[in-house]
Amino acid sequence: MSGERELMEAVRSAAELIVSSEYVIALTGAGISVESGIPPFRGPGGIWTKYGEPPPDQYQEFLRDPKGWWERRLKRELEGPTGEMVRKIYEAKPNLAHKALAELEEMGILKSIITQNIDGLHQKAGSKNVIEIHGNIYKLRCISCNARFDRDKFEIKELPPLCPNCGGLVKPDVVYFGEPIPPDMLNASLLEVYKCDCMLVVGTSAVVYPAAGFPIAAKRRGAFLIEVNPYETSISHICDVVLREAAGKALPLVVQEVRRLLARR
Image (cartoon, rainbow, N blue to C red; front, side):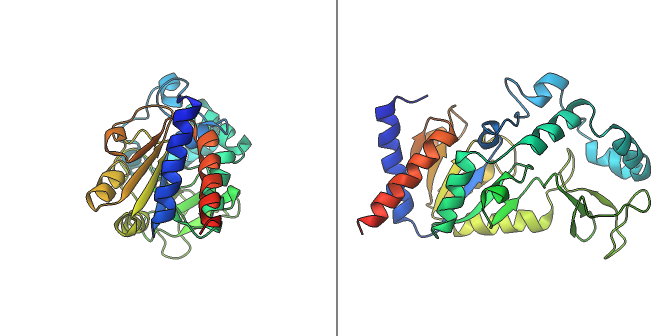
């Protein structure tokens, strides 16, 4: 954690970069939702630390027997690591960090959020342009045409469920181990990375690809990087500003400073 003086200096530097930039985006990871009570996957208190990581062929297991997979899933959905994560997400509410990013978007400054999270908290906080690269727990997705459906409104008439648009297999929207990132989400993310001249990297360890490569790609194109994370990461050394603090504390301060700078213009 930073001392207050160092934190405020970083807040001012971050706000100045944001205000001076033309296309600001954010990349968020599990750390931003920890403050909402959702455990991370790895590290202290992580779901996978507690239960072990899912098998690396998780997606292939689904493809081998989609009917059996759905039968098992519907019977055991609230058991084990999946059940614990589902319950935590359903109970969670947006925290001050989610709300701060939504406020930056409302101000017209933050153009988009690329999130690795599946919890939908950015949208609940009011953010509109959210790219969910790892999917959304509240949705189902056709693996053929990428059509997405509200999970609660999708009537499962047969197992496995099939897409009403194209007849393809339907699975939870969440991206599994061994599953390619849906091309529409990946392409949208790459376009935002290409356009940005400033990226906020919030609560991500920057080790899971392809998202981990986005800050590096943006930096190579000359974009500013602002990291918000209480812990050092693999990209800390290339960031222009580092706020070594929890996002729920740091981001509201950044928004406040951005408003102050804009008022002086």
